Image 1 (cartoon, rainbow, N blue to C red):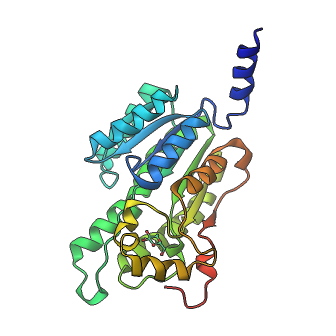
Image 2 (cartoon, rainbow, N blue to C red; image 1 turned 90 degrees about the horizontal axis):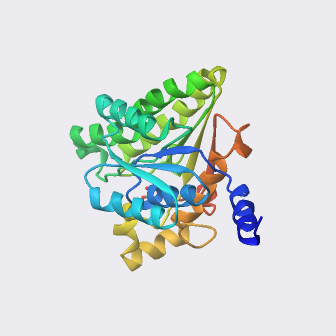
Length: 268
Ligand code: BGC
């Protein structure tokens, strides 16, 4: 065996997600994009779910392919059961199965509770809570046949922490907290584990309005004990670990990644 072949084999052996099929919802931007790229780097075959932004999704696919990875973009609105069903069947027919589902797609809308339109509540709950319900059910039905699978929900510190102006978002993330705990028990007999990741403030488009305003950015950083906003790659690396077989004994809990934000007294 040549030295180069040996080195390639050695590098592959260290890829913690080698040959796993991972489907990430909302993967054309932000944390989802970083998760798609990092998991592919760890050897996973990746499904990049998106809605609307086909160019951005194709760019993620291209970036993965340029790095010798395998990726496939599939459009689906996660709040619509027929589209979710179709996405999972397409993933299974193209890549064989879904080993890991990352429920990442999320939206956030700010308005005072007394004025919050019903349509805003429905949209936020639809993507952030009903989406994970539908995607998990569709993926877990397939995983249960193989008695193996992992579900990772990208939740938020606001599954616990109040966030004035964001009542629908808090309700969705609080719901996701209990969905994780309930499903850990319901899915354990089927060999499926489920875990929430709760990021604090991360430098992504969802936070653009705050981060592009110097005063708001400074106020936010003051709330964070580590004194900085997190990077999407930091969340993605945690997800790589949770998606790997090394994390197979973790289920029904939330892993917080927030620079200490949740423990700040009087935060937000
Ligand atoms: C929200 C961000 C917010 C962060 C910390 C996240 O869930 O998406 O808008 O900055 O929590 O409050």
